[in-house]
Image 1 (cartoon, chains in turn blue, yellow):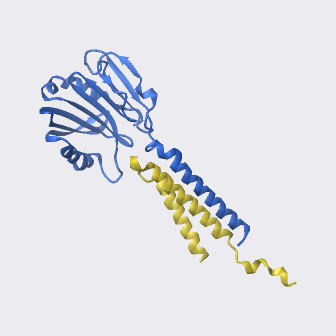
Image 2 (cartoon, chains in turn purple, cyan; image 1 turned 90 degrees about the vertical axis):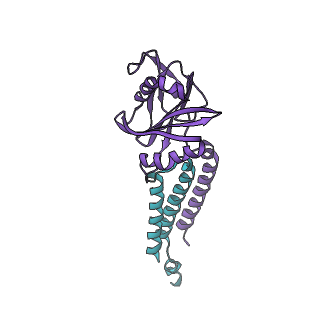
Image 3 (cartoon, chains in turn green, cyan; image 1 turned 60 degrees about the horizontal axis):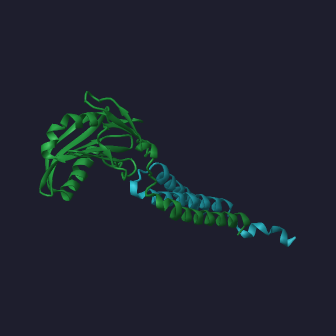
Length: 202
Length: 66
């Protein structure tokens, strides 16, 4: 066996050892390589959006490369700082709202994913799940799929509006949950928030 | 035999490159994809170079009989 072959073999083994140590060490703790960018948690205050009254805060999410987005929410909504990368969770007097990113596998479409995986998941995880409406929309020039449903929690009936917005890599998912009585009165405000969603790199 | 290992090495490198750059990796599996793709690329390239540089010992001792 010549020296070149032995050298290449040794170098390959050393490279594999480094790869193993690197993967088990630094990468293992990153949970998929996603991290919260502190800039994503900073809000910019703006006047009413889409005809809605009151001041709004603009959040510019820069956590996930290829999926930067902006969204305007009423300044009175409280941002929960424990949100994972690419996501926001807000609470307000009549309910709560979440904005998150969802991976869409190449072998499916967002609509198929919503109907064949997401809705069954909601059915299994929520008590007395009942679909109220399902519709296809266009938001920010992209296809969006909106699921309106209600469920029971602690003997109260909640209504949720969950919208999946097709994106460059992942889909944006905006969810509003509130008690059923409050949902109708805040419809215009929620629509304004939803319409303010914008992908930065379409 | 040498051709067989060369082709096998190229296929292994190709599989690694595919997993690294073209495969849609689910969010929770990025670290395992990183490891497997680089593992295949390293093993494939090393295998290909070893196949190229591998030479039979009988051709290297021709001057011993002089």
